[in-house]
Image (cartoon, rainbow, N blue to C red; front, side, top):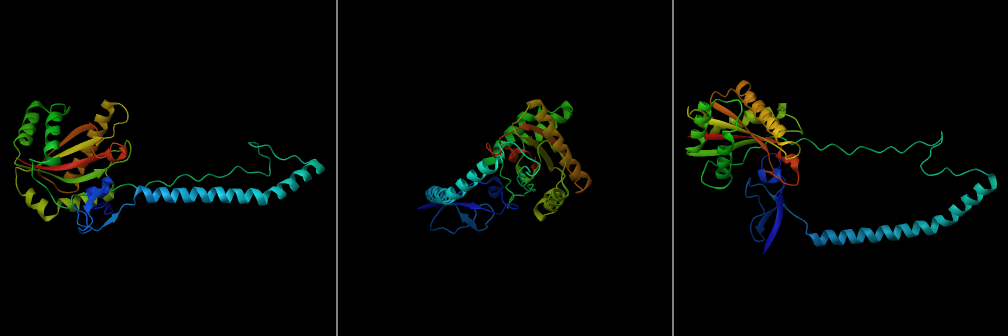
Length: 276
């Protein structure tokens, strides 16, 4: 028998960041296959339906009780208004003694932070690594601010890479292209990790920085936004993280890469390590 669970390790697990559901055998250990942290069982739809029905029934009963007990008082007030000639304020109108209700603004959602995979996967022949490689190859020719010679070099590096893997994912606000101080620190610590630092010693290592935008708005504008995001991360890597390896910022444009429903999750930059 299988159960559905979710990982809540939002700062260290891609599955948690995406909000993906995890299917596990009921007899297996309740841990995330991506980061190894404990997972939480998801509530079934039936239990939610029962709770919803009980709450609806409670609201109906409470409303009936209020109507029964409030009727005599309302009748008394109505009679008093008729005797004194005092008019009851009409709905939608305010008097000097009446103030419009204050409606609280919905709380702002806390910004997401950069996240690195629990384990660096450099196998270019499978899964996301393979699909991203093919997508990058189709985008290289569309890069506006790079010469044909450099395009050919980058294309050759990606095409003939023997290893390629995602290093870190950095989220952005709507229309934003700046890297926050918190994300800069996460990016710096990730690039200083033993695995990445060892790769950086290889002079042939290339960092390919992929900028994405959500699928709202004009495609040409989304290309420009995604390029700006990739350029910002490249600048941080060069100026604040001390990266001397060859780097390329590639605009991937609008995407539903991470979540087709929650489009804000596609406003990201991904840093990929490529070993040709």
